[in-house]
Image 1 (cartoon, rainbow, N blue to C red):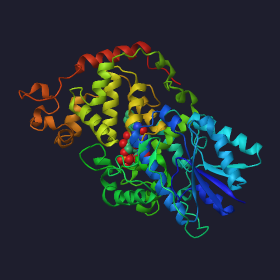
Image 2 (cartoon, rainbow, N blue to C red):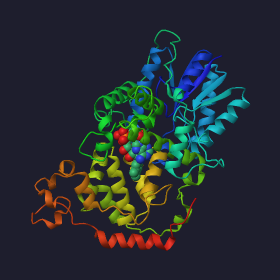
Image 3 (cartoon, rainbow, N blue to C red):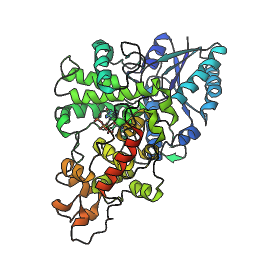
Image 4 (tube, rainbow, N blue to C red):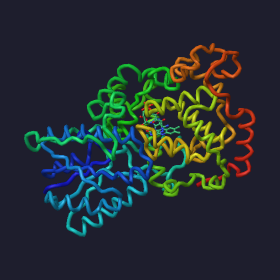
Length: 468
Ligand code: FAD
């Protein structure tokens, strides 16, 4: 039996169940579908598109070594995909299509349409779960409902997980001598060289990064993960988001490090983050309203956010007058990535201090992030805006000044991102308007105590006893 393997957010040859099992059944052809208009409509930004294109090129090279050609086809919108995939499958003489599931509603609808068309043309569809360790529906409450809070989800997730399940699959055996490789030079109009020095792509790079993280940083992760000036986290998020590496490969590295156990004091905090990633995938799969621009806690759809384009622009540019917020936004604009602590601080500043709709921030992050991922981005934004699953309570509002003093004590990170502050002494670094120096840096666009109370009053009027 010949199978067409459709690669999407699983751009790797190792631990790829769709590829592995399809190959066990016989010869395979691989494909990747370019949906440029759909991606743009979903705010996928240039840095991410360039990274995606480079990741496809790296995949093509790895597949070519296995004798598997990668066909790249165009279907500008998701509605064009079924016909394009059918035509390719027929051209290759495939009797089956195999792919790893994606969980956002639009992707699920696209896949259903593909399945209907292909099965009506006598091509069977085989769906695997290569983007997640435990698929949506497998971690449920006793009453068979999806979880809406992380901690009980995590407990159940750890109970359901069979330790043997995470052992990664090998790459499939080669089916012929290496085949020639075609390489993309651009994707959706974006040159692939964009930010290539910052974000080299592919599964070999990703596996090397994982090894390096376990060699150098995992044992200090719990301590260092909140300090943006330290390289204390794995920076694997872009690679996980395009699937150059799998969550199983990450968890297996922890298991190997602990000589058999998944968790140990050294790896626990990091494994937790991988489970957060799983949790948000379950949320978007099992609470469809979250995919439709709605708050998880639906009562908060009634919040009256401010329409404040100048404030939004100042936040986007990193010109709010709050150094840690601005340093985070400048890191995002400059590198396509932002440290997790700063994602929380900047998101909370936009939604609480400026009272700007979290969807505006979610959108801007998607346009800029190299790791832009609908489930994690939506989850992070709704957590910060207090509209999400186990969101930060609305009255617990980060003070951006003290966050700076606490998490960038030496000011190394903030000064690196905002050179205008390089001469400001430590005691005034996070309140530079209090220093007597003449510096080219804006005054705070809003006063913290006033903004905090304004947000509390607005959220209180809605009430926090709401649920999905
Ligand atoms: P590490 O600390 O090394 O963690 C390992 C992996 O666990 C990460 O690569 C990531 O896949 C996962 N992870 C870590 N923290 C979280 C989290 N809080 N939620 C879900 N998964 C997590 N992550 C994305 O991958 N894409 C996004 O678009 C995204 N948007 C976010 C928006 C906001 C407002 C917030 C608060 C968080 C967002 N996150 C997003 C989560 C998190 O900030 C990043 O995953 C993390 O900073 C990536 O750095 P790292 O790879 O070094 O993570």
